[in-house]
Length: 190
Image: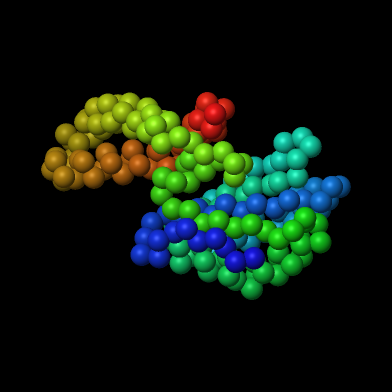
């Protein structure tokens, strides 16, 4: 299946692919074995930054694979590769329909619900983002102050701001938001 590419081709920042597979009844074990094969292979491709698998709740059939790459070009290289095409052909008999692929960049990924019918209201997205950024901007700079004072190059205001911003964005992107949004999903998508 051709990916639904909502990413800006000029944006070369981190990109996430959300892949959904509906597995036929009784085929979960075969699908899980296939996952053990494809995940390590994807990890060998340039720019791969990790994968999360969201297994279906009891009585449901949809697996969601969240795949992170550093750039759109690297993600497309994996999605369009002969290796992936061969692996998708191999799992196809176990699926109800084709794989569904979406490509997302930036903040939109944090607020992408598992169900297509659900959407977080903009004011809730604002509140969630603010509730994460505000405490980090209060905590991170004072925590780094001793390091900044000891190393001469880090005494420049611009260098300090760049380091603090990089740490905050990294924490938000890779550590906090994926877990936080999952934790508050009932409120967020209500």
